[in-house]
Image (cartoon, rainbow, N blue to C red; front, side):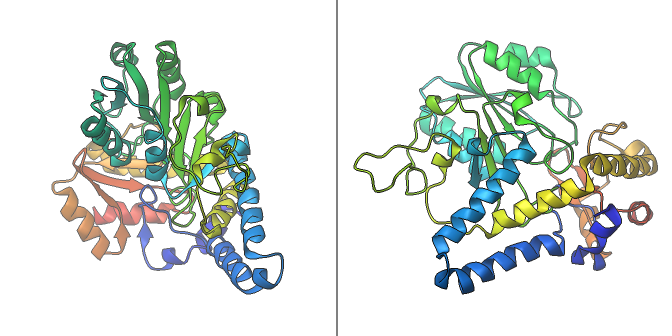
Length: 368
């Protein structure tokens, strides 16, 4: 499949000019078809065949292998969640917080990466230390100043939802680990845009999801937990899927990240996720990046001084100023052009993916 074929496979694009993949990507027919085909097989055939549980677990195992390969991780270090926010909360709830513990985060984080720590500050008397940034850029000197011996966890995005900038994850990991802190990365804006290798990052935890740039369906989140990080957690959630043998007299959690998976869940979103990953893989991330770089360059040239994102290519997220960003997004929607109004910075964001075209970019610029 090439970008032209990808575009033709997405029914939503027949009805609008879509620039909001950073919020939720429009799914291709084959991705939705993978989910519906599985649902039919699971409901209609499995009860009289191998059984619904075996069919479901086989599907989850196969999807986990695909996800692990895409993230550069062992499949056993990946847990399936419902979303990025779900993954963040699972880890936040498994850390044995003590009063005075510190979480360091940037001021660029999505609410999924701020609200759990704010809540812990209320319930467990932890400190949330915010590193301020400028134009979507993180100054490593500020990171080093913020990360001291009291810091338990550093949280950051690999790619910012506000500016589309890539943050220096590996450098932050080195600083945090030297101080004895763990690192949690929100990678939801990265997967499907450019190669992600969580092992190379060296982070302890990475949460992401498949419904944005991978063009999957809602409900398929992914949580990577480094094999050495499990022993630092205080697991409280438990169910038949999180233990080695649910019938054993003494329970034992799974060795890897599967201990976060508690009970019965539909494999359909994860079957679709695997299909989405294979679709992007078939196009090639190099092709995706090259096309997005060219299209965002065209958009940025047309925006001129309104551009708030970096002039050079870093991602498909292009943030720009408007007199009334919320009203602008609403007006564009009425004209069949889907963008996103951002609360911080107060601006409009266009998400450019490989299915977009030069004509799409020109339609947006003309409407502006």
